[in-house]
Amino acid sequence: MSRLSLISIILVTRNAEKCLQRCLDSIFQQRYGAIQLIVQDGGSTDGTLAILRANADKIACWVSQEDDGIYDAMNKALTQVQGEWVYFIGADDELTPEFSDLAEQLQDSNTIYYGSVWKEEKKYLGRLSAYQHAKTGINHQAMIYPASVFRKYRYDTQYPISADHILNMWCWKDRSYRFEFHDYTIARFSHTGVSSLQEDRAFEKRKPCFILENYGIIIWLRFLFKRLKTRVRRLNVY
Image 1 (tube, rainbow, N blue to C red):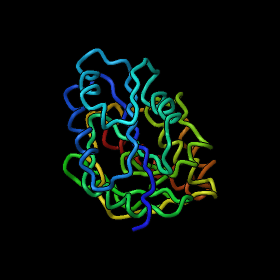
Image 2: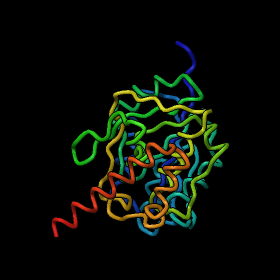
Image 3: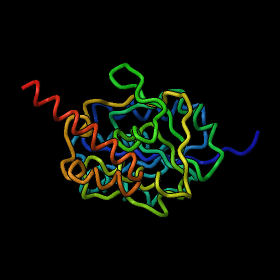
């Protein structure tokens, strides 16, 4: 058997005592054994730190400090990455056994591999077209990145909910990388997180510009037409 590539899993937490152990267990139980687990805690005041201490022998490193949101925490954690691959998960998410199946497919260091997630007990999103990639984006819980992505890019923290979507847009335009789908459902995605319940208004305002810059005029025009069509339909309803 060839040497397994090390995957750095970055787990971001804050006051997550109710769900953290389930998330940790889903990582510890993976069949794929070459994992560096990095936990970046945002200064929890509940029982989160006690859980981290109790699991410290299975965590490569963990830090608890104030941050300016989830993407700032992710950027901080990236300084600890030792793996050839990087994966992000929230404390209220869980890996499935199929994470290991996708991990075993990692071969090309210029490929961003992605699968699907379970969301409200439904498989979400599957393989995305270029237009779907631009409009909807891929959940970061469905993606395993080559570490080189984060030697070139960091999350733009002025977009507190959609910075992962923007980073994926940059990667789409970057000819150094390509996206490859594998039909594995690798995580259970919590639909009660901030990204599901709120809108990133700064991102939505600039979204057409991001699409034009990273996907070209045809997909940009399609996006504008679909958005206009949706707005007209809503006006007709009211």
